[in-house]
Length: 149
Image (tube, rainbow, N blue to C red; front, side, top):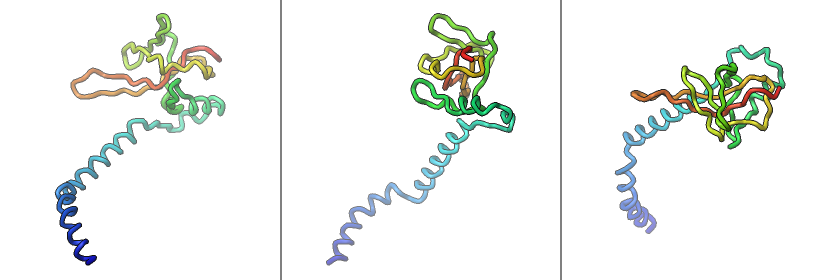
C-alpha cells in the first residue's frame, strides 16, 4: 500500500518539478547567483595596502566606525577621501563636493554631523558607477563636513 501511495505521489509531483528543475536550468541559476555574489563582493571592497599604518588609533577607529544618519556604514579608512577647501561648497543646508572632475550634491541623509571630525578636512565616502552609454554616477555613502578638530 505504501508503494502505491508513493508511486501516485511521484506521478503528480515529480513530472512538474522536473519540468522546471532540469540540470541545465539549475546550472544556469547557479552561474547567475555566483556572478551576482562576485559582483557585490568587489563593489564595496576597500583596499588598504599599508598606506594607513601610521594613522593614530583614535582616528583609525573613528573612520572604521563612522555611520551615516541612516545607520549605514561609511566603509573604512581606505574608502574615505579627504577634500581640500576648494573642493567643498555649501549653499544653505546643501553641501557640494568636487570629485571625479565634477561637482556633486551630497544627499542630506548622508551628511554626518554627530560624530565630530578629528582630521579637520571634509571627508567624503563614495564609489563611482559607470554603465555603458551613460554618464558617470557618484554614489555617496557619507560626507563629513570640515572642522570639528
